[in-house]
Image (cartoon, rainbow, N blue to C red; front, side, top):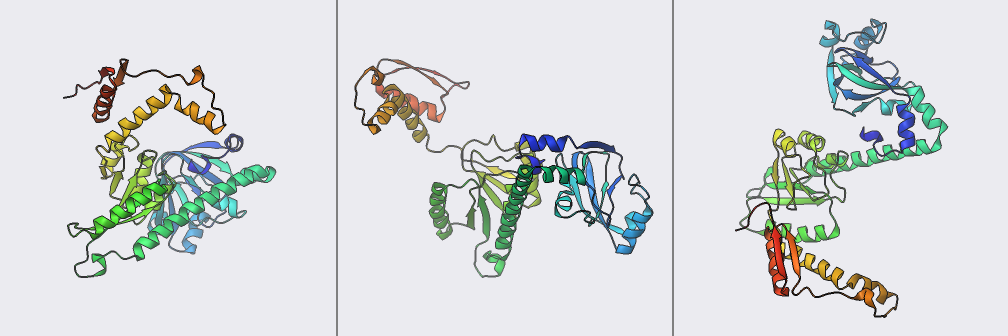
Length: 368
């Protein structure tokens, strides 16, 4: 579960030692509304639902008629006089954690029951408190987890409020105003921001553009935690280290994000099957400055061949000794193998040809 994904192995083992696997049928009640929350629940399979009674009197009557927790939530009274708050599904989803950590015997806001047959890991509240009370390190780790959750939630809420309350051009009724596409750019470094801001401004100022782009930036990479930052945005812009797996795409879909734009050529970090299922449009850069990549490869080749990295370190240490450790060799007349003859590979071959090297190139697809 993401709640405990980053905790130490010791804390994970301590929690796992107290967990009990429950396999239940549809309709099984784990927690009654208005009753103390006594267990943390972690879903392995199935769907749990939180339902709230129409009134406190109905909630009390349903709980009073249930002498044990192993009752079936299928009575007409339970269904007709309650509403579904939300559904909890997906491996690793958690319910009851904040109730247990905030206060002893805190009362449940809603009834938690199994909508489908489910496998659920259960850990008693007293066992969790004992773990945190007996080890200060574990308590600090849990505080860090909660702080991260609050940070993610606050950033998501700020972004949503900003986008809902901010100007949106034609949507505000301004005659002739262009519609606005809101984009959140993940994994943004200073050079990313410096490159995009003038480009976005130039696009918006162009009379040819049918819409305007409003781009915001975050240094966080896309993950299950940071996916909620995209609340209120139409599209997200990703880079090579962002993780757009099925779970991230599910969250983005719930937030009504419609497009994923990759500012790189590769798209292996995007679950294409999930993207199709959720109706995302995925765009990428088909090629960008293949000369820059090929020239950088040559720079690395010459650095290794002529021991430039070693000489640089020695110079910084005021060591100007000339010895065999700095000896390189001519590229002219040597045979160089090139794996891959796409756009970058072909440019690299032309540069190496200028050195007077003999070339052996290979690719799974023959170039024109």
